[in-house]
Image (cartoon, rainbow, N blue to C red; front, side, top):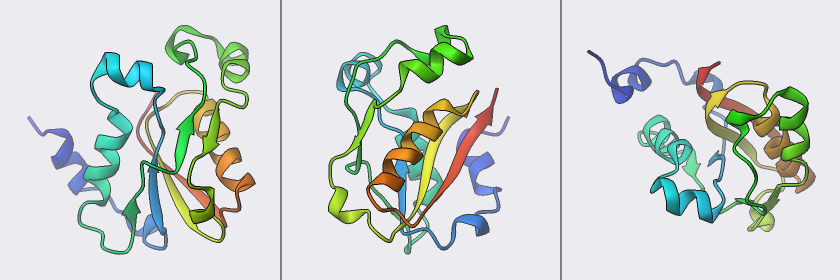
Length: 135
């Protein structure tokens, strides 16, 4: 049975060749401590470990609030839950950059939309979305 790394190695990454940074969707520190890992960070490392031109940057995007897990919410509640939940910590590194935002699962798109909005507000030239699965 193929593992995640096997699946990732077969993916055509040409759409992301022009990206400067791969930015994983951040977890709030409380959730990160509880889980022990950020699955989006692991995916970013798997997708971009062979790519010299695109650096994985987990230090750019930060989740400001410890929000309710999106998995327990419907569409409208998901959108309200994440309003202004993200900020750029190293915003000076964002202007003019093409960013690949990496998330584990795309459900309603609320998480990647809020993260993208934040990155664009800080001057990102473009944000492309890469997710492992779609629900």
